[in-house]
Image 1 (tube, rainbow, N blue to C red):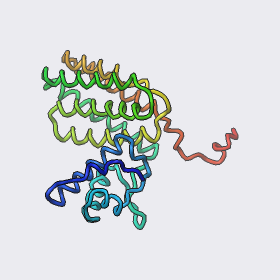
Image 2: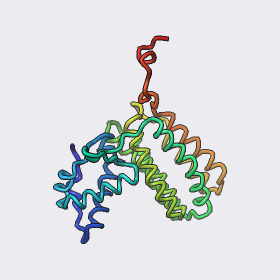
Image 3: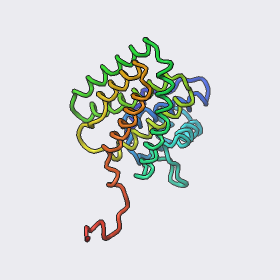
Length: 238
């Protein structure tokens, strides 16, 4: 298991802060797709990397389990969650319910400074979109998720922002597991147009495009690949 974040060892002053820092580091590795679905998270190994007790590691893993990013199995340990196709569909269904509410909030509250930050972020997305390779693709996917998180942050509703952070992280897991090869047809152009509509105060237009954007992201997934087939279906007999 390559966690690749040993340099991020926590220097926090109490166990709760250390556990939260480890939780954040593992979550970032999952969102960045450096930790694949199904990866075992050994308490001993994580504790050694961060120089903390297994009790602190266990607390961090419990936080991630609560967020749906880690599965804990009795007598086996903790693993990066491996969502089923049905769970993947539920994640995107949840996004369709939550993100219109975020659009409604941000359209009312967005400031010129917020718009400027989002424009700068879109420039980063555009740069990543032009690059090739797996690392660039991972970075582009993360940047795409970060755009949705920025929209939530500028909406000013901390509860919705927290929900979105969880949904974006779980979406990254789903994309890592079910994403098709090649570059997604969704992304930067949609983001740019959504931001234009928000800036213009067009809540309905921004909401409609956001929903289409989420549909597009889900359509890029090969969710049938993970469905359980009958023997007849697997052998393609009729």
